[in-house]
Structure formats: structure tokens, C-alpha cells
Amino acid sequence: MKGFPKNFNWGVATSSYQIEGGVFEDGRGESIWDRFCATPGKVANSENGNLACDHYHRYPQDVQLMKELGVSTYRFSIAWPRLFPKGDEVREERGFDFYNRLIDELLANGIKPMPTLYHWDLPQPLQDAGGWANRETVEAFAKYSAAAVEAFGDRVQDWLTLNEPWCVTWLGYMNGVHAPGVQNLDHALAAAHHTALAHAEAARAMRAVNPNVRVGLALNMTNYRLEDESDEQLAELGDLMDAQLNRWWIDAFLNGTYPAPLLKLHEQRLSKIIRPGDFDKLKVQTDFMGVNYYSDSFIGLPREEDKPLNEGGLFPFPHRMNGTAPGPYTDMGWPVTPDGLEDLLLRIARDWPEIEDLAITENGAAYDEEPNEQGIVEDDRRVQYLRTHLAAAGRAIEKGAPLKSYYAWSLMDNFEWAEGYNKRFGLVHVNFKTLERTVKNSGKAYTEIIQASRKA
Image (tube, rainbow, N blue to C red; front, side, top):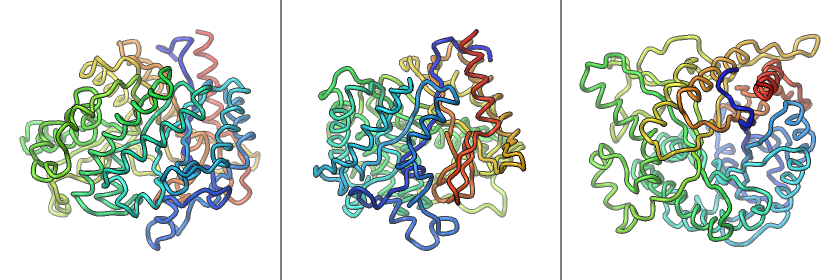
């Protein structure tokens, strides 16, 4: 695989609620996803993360799987309700003990840990007070982040504050298809501002505890492809979507502001949310940026059968607007667009040269292959997805993109949020009845790619 230096960081990624299980054990508090899953009609097949992959008990086995794959780094998330069950300052030491054991197990096997502090499992008591629409959550998050660094920062250098704040904001507080299931534009805009503020305040709090930590942020990003680039209305919509998804949080930490089109569109609402001095607080040193990329997005001209835009004039999903996306598609219904990853990485390098360290913190595909009679998972489509996207990333590196790390999503099949267990993203197959793990052909292909890059 061309483009990747010998010291490139090869990893896999997971998140706490999707794999850990053990939600009622060792003092863990209720999260918004526990509540959301218990609400009828919210999750496919009424499924939940109560057991998931039982990583909480099987983490030594899972670390051995990582070692078998040959990865040098592991991105996981810390469950906030395990450390602070009510989201206040009352600690649960058994939660701290679990992550201490996990980190030590990783290091003993030569794997560098990279925790994400917030991958969507907000303590439910904080949501009861308004969640990310409540400014007080920013302070609570900063205190939790500082406590995590105090506990684990002697062994962990690289940290991500939040994962995909766009999803937190627009899927959680506007569209309502993710926890906490709110549908309110004012709450969504407040969440958009407060997550940006939380990244900055947490980064400062973490460095106050340990100035040697490196702090990053993981953003889901895409390229918007217009059906007709000469159409002014379509171009305006494309710019708004790009501002909402790609630019909001980057403009915040780099420049202490938000994209002008959105400030204008939501001027009256934001005037009630953004306080004097907030823009100064948004700007913060961000040592690296994570990019979660799955596919490009396509914006088409309106058709008669299209539903109207939601309140605020923006579509809720980045992948499913009314443009005609080329096939093939993954099981999520997303088009496979590997060249888009190269374009996106080069766009970041061009538009934000201040970002000198990029990580692809998620990239993967949902396909449903099961083990055959010989116990082999022949997931050829995922192998192809992996190879073509890594080739695109390699080309971007050769052209100057500052890409230092790649984390495949995901280590193993898991609880896929509102999709339940219907969608499988793993390099490792999980039998959700027996919890048996089987490395798929895609996992074996990833190992070959890693080994080849280290010999290059």
C-alpha cells in the first residue's frame, strides 16, 4: 500500500456503549442510550447495549484479537456513567478500575491507548437537566475530562474529547433518531454551541492537570456533491450543509467563530445562546483532528415526492439527501466512494493548513456476511472497501495531507445505535448468541496491509 510511512499508526476503533455491556454492574449509572433503548419504537427490534459484546468481561480476549491483527493503537471510549454515575462529582472507583485494567492490558501487549471521552453515553441525570442544550453540561464535561486525565494520563498521551458532535447535535436534539430523541431546533443549536465550547473547556482543563497530553476532536465529515453545480439554490444548500457538518467545529477551535452562513441563518436563536466572551473561549489548541469518513453525500434538485426541509432549512442526514448517489451501497444504504476520502483529506490540508496532524478515526462498512461451514467469513466487499479507501488515503499522504493515523471501524461487530444488531461493521465477527469472535477475511487483509507498510 503506497504512501504510508513505516511509523504510521495503524489502529482499530470501538465505543463503550456499543461493545461493553455490563450496564448494571459495578455502580455504572444510567445513560441516555439506556433510556433511549428502553423507549418503545426507538431502536430496531427493541434491542439495547445491556450485553452487547460483553467487552466489560472479555477485554483481555479482545486485546489479544488486536494483537493478532497487528495494530499499534486502539481507539476506545470511556463511559462517563461508569466514572461518574450521575454526571456530578461523585466518583465510582470500580469504573476507574475497569479502565485502568484495560489500559494496562493494552500497554502490556504493545498497543497504544487512545480514549474518547464522549462517545454519546451522557449520564441520564444530566439529560434530565437539559443535556447538551444546558450550558452546565459544559462545566460537568470539563471536570470529568480532567478527572480522567488525572487517573490515566500517566499512561495515556493522546485523547479525543468528543466523537461526532454533529450527530450529538442534529441526530440527538433536532432529528431525534438518536438519544436523547429530542426534536427542537433551539436545543440543537444550543447543543452545537455547547459541544464546541465543551471541547475547548475540556482541553484547557485536561492540560491544567497534565500539560503533556495531546488533545484532539473526532468529526464526521463528507464531501457534498451537487447534482447541478450551476443551480444557485443547490449551491447555497450545499454551502449551508458544508458549514453545518464540516466547518462548524473546525471554525470554532481554530478561529473562535462559526461559519457566517449559519450565524446569519440562525442569528436570532443564537443570540439567546451565545454569551459575550464565548467566541474567545471557543478557540483552543487542538493537537490533532480525527476524521470519521464513510461516504460522500449527494444533493439533488427537489422532486415532487421529496419531503420539505425541516425547520431551520437543513436536511437531518448527511448521506440521504435527494441526490442520486452512485452504487454500490453498503448495508447502511451509503454509497461506496473511496476517492472522496482522498478529496476530503486534501481539502482539509488546503483549507486548514493549521491542522498539522490528522487521524482517520473511523472508516468502515456494514456488510452482513456470516461464517461459512469452515468458519471463514468471506466478506469480500469489506476487503474491497478497506483496500480502496486505504489506497485513497495513501495517495492523499503522497500529495501532502498530514495523515498520521488510521483507525478501522470497527474492531468487531457491535450494537449499531438505532439500527440495533442489524448492521455489522466489524473486522471481527461476533455471534451475538454465543459471543464467539471470528476474525473475518477483512481483518486478515488489514493485517497484511499493516505488515506490508512496515516493511516498505
